[in-house]
Length: 207
Image (cartoon, rainbow, N blue to C red; front, side, top):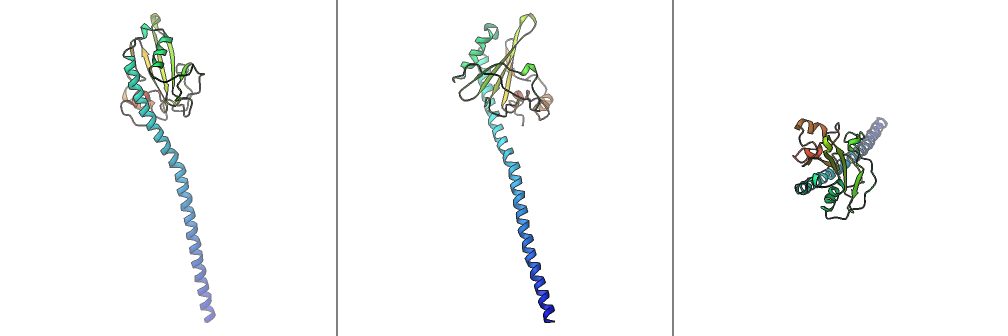
């Protein structure tokens, strides 16, 4: 009987040891899960913080350029003069024209030709202004202005760090200003181009 009791005691001790070992394993599993969550959440949090900064920067730039545009008339300038007026308004040294670089739509697609900018200027703080000019009926001049908040630094994506204006005769406004809220919301999503984020964020749209 004594031997049987000792065996039971040893078996219970062994069970206790296994329970401790299992608990330690659980700790490692939980630790791994926490690390995995951190790897997922932290980049998203950083990306969200950067996006808030980009939108704030864009809103202030929008105000600045609209105030400037109100004093300009595209019909009184040739394109080079018009570009120079905008560039100089930033009160920040700009480099000479830089080479085009890769910018994507919000859904990951490559922009069509209308949104590929060749006239690009970069400031020393890495902001980039781009211009695209077209001619309509009766040689009416109109165009697009692109503003990249952090220049060639990624993500270089419309609706994230790239925004813009449309220029039509004497009217200059954020891209998609005349579109419905439904179109704005649809385009400023991971399935859209991101072009309409230029106006969607101005009116308080969420990202």
